[in-house]
Length: 403
Image (cartoon, rainbow, N blue to C red; front, side):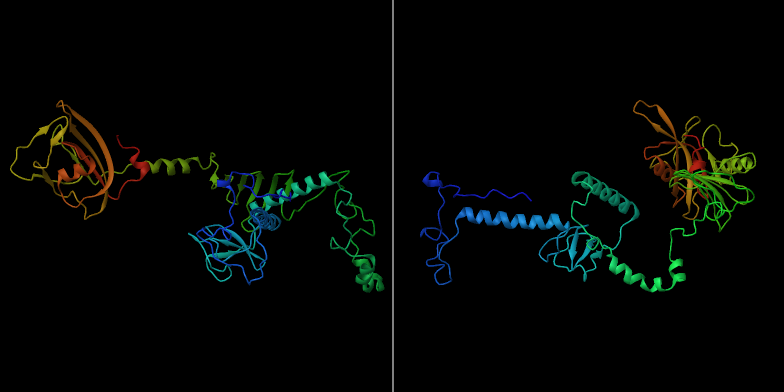
């Protein structure tokens, strides 16, 4: 670490008197003055201000150097550790994974800390890559001819004497020693071992059995799942599988598998997907425009809430308000969740009527027509048509309704 340049004089030694440094122990008027403060305790002189500064710089540098060398600081009881802090405690690394601040809680005793015992694969590979680059850069910088003067012992190896001691028992028995050799002592060729030469290549004849699949280059494989018999072809993150039933599925990256569409499964998929959008007949359909004799689904009776004049617009439907309301029997379904598709009209300031179709899943607690319309469109003044489904429609089915 670069050595700091020390101060060699008092900072204000050449300043004007009013800015000069003052020793509180000699200034009897200073607020912290205590007479004979250091008498009898072994002090003969005091450090000058620049010496205190040099000391503080040095102790700070020592702490920084310790942090740089160890990478992670030791745990201290008076330090506040936020979420995801890492410390060293009794030669082990701990991670603070609890919300909030941890202070004074020993990592090995507190449930807020967990010991860092392993790395996840991606993090390990990333750090390994960084380490390899650091080693490569270091080798390039200092050279590869043993710049650190390492010997066989310092790198964890064995000298000849130690190796002889370890192998002496095997050397006494020629057969046991021969079995331990891994350098092809009989000079067996690939052809003799039933393999092809990596250098010259060749062709196999007859059936070939691969236990775990075949690798094609760096990112392609062909393999068979021993559990279910599926045969798969992988190219990077794209996987194509063929199962025993003849179905072919494809998977890209971390997505779920999807069956490939062909002539054999087209009808099955077509029926399945189209049925998702098929809208069943409503349990109740109430037309309130054109004519009250329109064909409907379900039985219902409309009754005015009070003795009021019934107002019907044959284009926009039945007029409603908080004072002009109607009861429709069989409207509520015992507090069940229903899909309601309704055409309503809203009066504008100029007297015009704006029609709107709305669809929602709601629960009806009474048979009030005004309450129903207000749930869907608060400022609705006309109701043209009501359709009710129980159970509720799916999002695919709702997409087929008029908007």
